[in-house]
Image 1: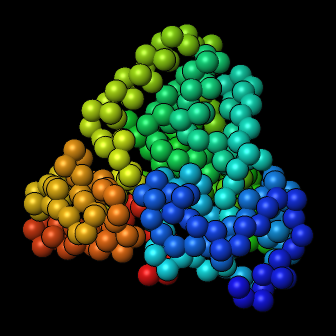
Image 2: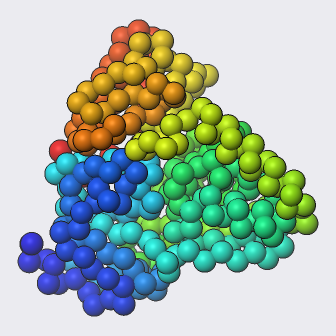
Length: 299
């Protein structure tokens, strides 16, 4: 362990040295973090950011659903937002959520409270923090359509309240700087709806996901962003990549914009498979695919 470990500030949360990250991701692959930090709450996180050694790199992870941790692990401190960032409070049309809340949980909580227009969140794996950072979307809606503002800590621990306009939200993109961490958000729904009607819409989304995506496999969700006026899965299919394998990594036969860890795949297997898919798609269509899955760490 590097000597900077002894210089980390005293916190109310928990430091875990040499923490295995494979267990924190849906792919179940990857190396360890030098230190995993689970802050107690936003104030604890802000204290850490403002007092940590300047040279220590910081990486933030959520539910690990859209994340590939490389086999060499991650240098510095990996932050995972947990219970202190999982509150949900509903005030009329407005839903106050912590960044650690699962998107699915927000959708189901709003259903029970009769707040509509957030049903699509049940189709997005991961947390609100990650969804805001990448402007996640599904079934015709995106986070920017329902976001009132996000609370964000900058790399020095200062708090900012940013609107969708300030975040410059576009398809699977925001202008949020590296090192800035989403801690919470306010979403706008439509109160006074029938929970049964909301439930039917949610059930339809879940059934469609189950029918069309490998939801029970070790996957990371959509691998590549859709290019302009194209569907990534169609380009991948046309390039003959459906079912393609490298080691124990495979392009899903059910939905070929998903990669699977069949059992013993390494992160390198998965990344190499994704790069081979990109190569074949470019060779056959002239389109360059961009990764939607976030890759972190050392190869």
